[in-house]
Image (tube, rainbow over all chains, first blue to last red; front, side, top):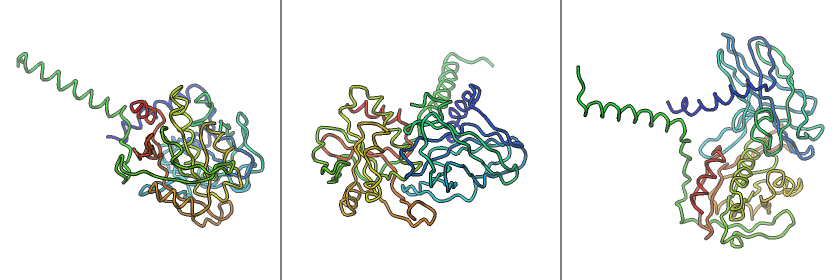
Length: 159
Length: 199
């Protein structure tokens, strides 16, 4: 019961937020929303990519690669906290279950954008092509929030 | 079947209790994990240079509450998320924020000194103090807080390595005593409420 009751407020928040008009992208049965990143200082540190993927179809799918002109080496990673230690192994793919959704979100799956070609500036955006095992490719526009943001600017005030 | 007054009262009480239980489950956050240190018995120490190369010591912060986080600036997810929570806590404390000193201790000090630690911490909150020492100073500080960190070879990561580390946020009281850990992912509102109960 606990996971459901704890998740409920977040599900409600996510629902309300997308109704307010965060942009969304569609590929087959998949809908991508809340694509966001954090601003960077210069290009020497990796940036991050977060998004929400919903699968309205009856077949499981998976996000297998991401690519963007802003970074030479974008990779899918997952933050794992095991026995009180956080590590960030490379994720081969991010499962998007049939009828379900998955978040690339702080503390879980995320895109790690290494080899930045330019600093990411708050308020700007960049394209990100997401390739799914079955649905294929879709390019979304990723909004850049403040470095200390905890969510996309279309959801919060970005401060 | 007719219910006696007592039965009715018991039924109403049972229903109210169920509602309260469910509501409590919905709104009470998960219990943060408790670190192995016993509250008020551990006095963690550090002697580390700040971004301007001044040595900073745990003893100079007596009289203030410390929020201490170990991390590295090349970390795209865990570290920005935690430092953002810390920034939110500092804003939420308002005028009482001057009783709290947030400290970010680099566990990847060589690279972080080269990249610059001050501009990194300042991007989250101007009050966060970034410290990055040498290998021995860093290991001593981590041991004193009983935290784990390790360099891991990662072929595709920048410079060929990444760091795994204990991601908790530690609260040290004005006497320098370890009070508690806020485990990774504890919402800022919960940290703020806990701090506001203490001072």
